[in-house]
Each structure stands twice: as C-alpha cells, then as structure tokens.
Image (cartoon, rainbow, N blue to C red; front, side, top):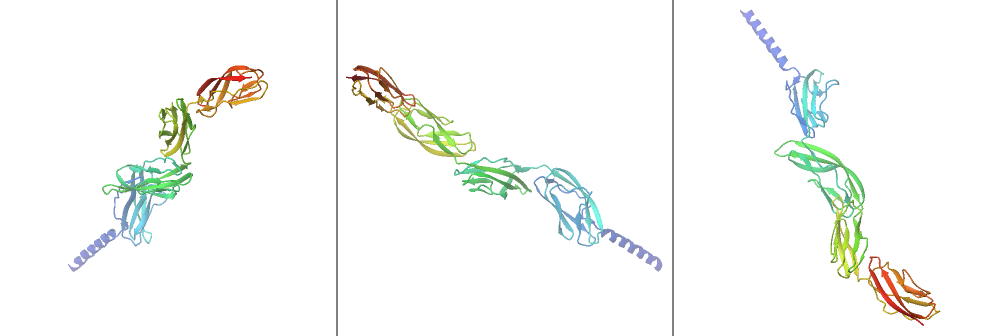
Amino acid sequence: MRLRLLKVLLLLALAAATFAGVARALDFDDEDPVPPHAEIGMVYSYEIGTHAGCLPHRLIVPPGGGNLPPGLSIRRIDLDTHVVEGVATEAGVFSAWIHLLDCDNRSAETLFKFEVWTRRWGIATQSLKPAAVGSPYSAALEGTGLPSDVTWEVTTGALPAGLTLSPAGTIAGTPTATGSSTFTVKATAQEKNFGPTRIDSRQYTLSVLQPLTAKLSRSTAEAKVRFRATLLAAGGQSPYTWSATGVPAGLAVGSDGVISGVPARTGSFTVVARVTDASGTTRETRVRLVVRPRLSIATKFLPGAAAGRAYRAKIATLGGVEGKRWASGGLPSGLKLGATTGTITGVPAGAGTFRITVRVRDALGAVSKKTLVLSIR
C-alpha cells in the first residue's frame, strides 16, 4: 500500500514538472499575433511581449525571414518587451518571421503580418507662389484628409530672408533679397477626437523676384486730343493686372494698363496705379500725367523782310507737346521753313507781299494751321 502511494506521488511530481517546463518555454506572449494596421504617414507603435528563457530577450527578422513594412523597425523597450515603431512609407501587406532569442541563444519564432493602408492625411499644397522684394507676402500651407489639428515646421533648408513659417502653416513677411530658397516643411497632424498622429513632409522652392515697379510710357497729354499711353511694370511675375485712381476726366484705365480717351481739361494729375502680378503680389505707385492746352499757333504777324538780305523769323506756338513737325505753302523764293524748328530763314529774292500758310503737328497728332502775311520791300 505504501509502495503504491509512493508511485502515485512520483507520477504526480513528474506531471507537475512536465507542465512547469512547458509553461516556462521561451515564447511570445501572444501565440497568434494580429498587429493593428499601419498607414502611410501615421506614427505607428505595436508592443510585443515575450516570456521565459533567460533575459534579456532579442527580437530580429533574420535574412530570408520576410520584411517589416518600409519605415518600421524593432526597438527593445525593456528586458522582455519590444516595440515595432516608425512611420510606414509603402502600402500593402508585409509578412515577417520574427525570431525571439534569449541570453543563451535559445529561440522561438512567430509569423507576423502587417497591413499598411494608403495615406489618409497629407500635405495638399503642391507649390508656392513667388514673392517680390519689398512687398508683403503671405501663403497658407494646407493639408487634406481626415480632420486634424496640424503643426508645421521647417526641418531642412531655410526660408528666404524676411519670411517665417508659423506653426499654423502660414508663410508670411516681407522678403529682403532676390533669389530662390529650397527648404523642407514637416506637418504633424493630430487626428481630432484623440485619433492617431500622422506626419507628412514636402520640399518647396520659393523664388523672390525683383520688386514690382511701374511707370507710364507717355506722361504728357493734350486737352481735347485723343490720348493713349501704357502703364509698364517691371519685376514680379507677368502677366500683370492694373487699376488706377486719379485719372483725368475723359481718360480710363484698362486692366491691361492702357490709359486712353480724350482729356477734358488741362492740369497736372497724380495717378495712383495699382499693379498685381501673376503671383498675387500687389504694388502701388504714383505717376505724374500732365495735360497741356491744345496745340495752336500763337504768332499773328511776321516781321517784314528786305530783298537780298538775310531773314529769320520764329513762329511761336501755345500748348501741344514736343515732337512738332512744320510745313508751309506760299513762301517766296529764297526762304524756307524749318521742319522741326518752325523758323523761316533765308534771303528773299524779290519784293512783294506774300500770304504764307504754316501748319504744325505735335507728337499726339494735334494740328494747328494759320495763314500769315509776309511783306518784302
């Protein structure tokens, strides 16, 4: 009876020892792991626990054992806990045999399958409009996808001098020098309602152009004479769009910068021209436009001449603009009218009274004509 009892106790002890050995076998805590999905751009973290064996434990993916998703890697947290972490960069399903090694190089292995979804939040802004030296600049970077609270920062390179990037994603300031700057912007998006964090980066090149300037192709007009001039821009990025205030009555400004019409009155006018370039940069400049009286011949009488003696008489004008051209008819033999000077010169050949027609035209096309009497004794 006592011998039989000893045999039973021995069998129970062996069974207990066998069970204890199985319980202490080196292994992963999760026998059938199903990692949570990853996502391109999402900050990923998946803990893997291990037990038994001697510490510390190591997890590796051996050559030929498959691959973790690109962008993810294994890091040990403590003696028997590791984490698969990172930011996945490629969508798909990735299989990896992860080997567990203890301090005596005993091992166990389990197949892990990681599903990576396509990106669900990212930077939407593709490029930046150019800036201009001395002109205020503002450009808002935007994201697209799941509603998130986003923080923006420059991680490499630098913005043009005079510009900064706010955490809210607005590039603003006044550039101080021309040139192009290349930099990388990182956006960290925290999904609303305590969702995961996502990250995206994009490289931009921002060009700073010469400052916008403007001038008027012609600054003198003439009352009651059709006028046409063009506002000319330099710097910035064409095409340009124009508007203006302070234009004399009778004239109008088109969006193409053409000032045209018939001025109603004389005077000196300050035109405030506003030009906007293709990037949205705007500049105001002041140009002076003078409206002169209409061209007319002021001379009423010609001084008398003597036959055989040198003669010179200047015909005076009022108003008009420079670039006058003269013509005449009925001049006596020996005299001529300067085409650009309006001066009659020469030596008259004989005496008599002559009716001379003089005509002048200015650069705007205004014409004045008068008949004058020349007496030669």
